[in-house]
Length: 357
Image (tube, rainbow, N blue to C red; front, side, top):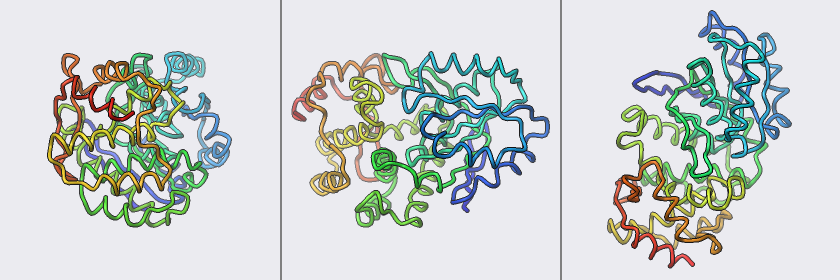
């Protein structure tokens, strides 16, 4: 087991990572929450089928009620949020209750947002079950979606701890592994060349990643995110760099309809687009041919879906949280490990999107 500590302006908390770390959860709850009452466990149907019973065995000494959501982004709606809040009230949860978010990034986002707003805030613990959630479970950005844009209703609310038990990752589908690995690639590109080059050399098949390599790359990703969040908890500056690939990626997700393309698949397309812009506008020296070939070998699609309206994508990008007065700001790279924010004229975005066809 490895333990990292995430330090922000509002809170410092541990991230426990490794196989079997979930066994330490009861001790942590007893030590940290002397006046605890009932625990509400938020998870989705798929995670419940695979892992709910094993988690319940671990936390059986506590009073637990379970709320099960739809799978993926379908969990992050006003309707599901309202149902969960109603359930929590009906179960007579109080300010000493604890919420456990048990699942992927969508469950972490939803669970954290519920925790941040129920009775003006209760404690919560993240138990991620996907590779993707190594990014979303750390840093305290919690939210639900709006039809106009992803994660537009939310808050900054840090967990009390993250228990990242890698035994849960074993049951992921290839599609889910692909989605999560996109965020690993993102961390490498915005932070350091060695990380990126090791991924390029050693990751040839997402179904056969060595356990030690998996733990190493997830640790590296969490360290990178943690260092940025420490400096900029509420995205007033360099935390925006963590959105590399997300400006177009989120637009594609929204236009495709949430759930019709995974977050990571959309972000990969967004990163390829941002890298091409970086080569033109920031003089980035980068082997794009090698990168795209590697992505194709891993099963990614790297071009914008041809049926999507370029103008509608641009309108979505204008609503991105980094936008200023509807002007599009994107994270680009000067070099690997040297991200910058740049305001990109709409006509440039449109021209580059047309070349994607």
